[in-house]
Image 1: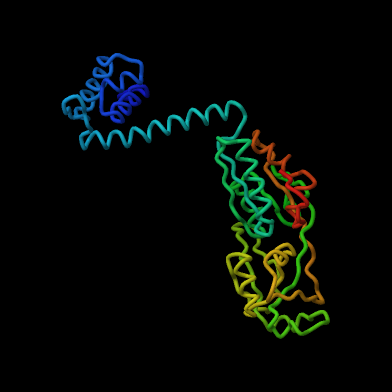
Image 2: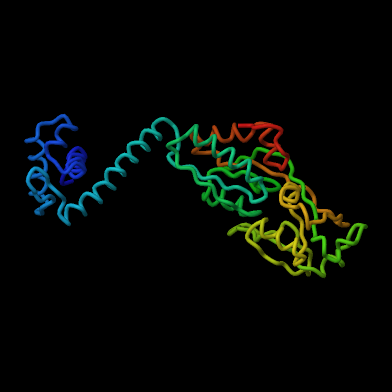
Length: 307
């Protein structure tokens, strides 16, 4: 390496104040030591970083390039120091959580806020998955933890699952849809006539599934429940949505109807790999496993702040 971290910081200070004397004062050094550092670095690079203008100096074009890139180097060094300290203390420098798209977003926001306060230096990534994409992300090691993985743990090879509870679904149509006028439970042959709004499973290696789609029924794939509810409200499609989604996004224009073959509640799990879990991961599992928070993740409205 052609220079030290300390020398890079000296050059940064000289560039900031455009003065050898001012930089020396702030670094508690004599001006001659600062001048020597600048001169030796310029000699080692074979370039001129500063041009002198009376009592002040300013960066050359080459110097501007050097300052910009050496700043990035210093930031990387600081990040490296922080991450080494984190690893040594048992905190993961990075932590990735996959979240089932049916889990209430408000609960996840609450969790992230408290996580950031507890682990301000840990790089947290939240990624949304759909259906078996939750398990796929965990087994493929694209996530360290999954919130709301559905049904049951596929196999226990290096993965543990904590039951969260069950999440309820409701069947909804727009209030102007022909099915809105039917009071009795709807039969499958009636439902197949209309497109079912679906969010595509994000699984790569596991079998792709749908939250609700009858054999022979046309699927209308959308990216999220907000889009799904808007299309249902416009009578373009019908479908099953989590009960908490229907409650929060329903309102005017949406009608709940019963169907003969009701969609069963979905069992949700907090799942994680059994090896390599650090302090942030263990804290997350304990936080998310609290009874009141498990209920929130399964769609129940929190009586009060649970963080």
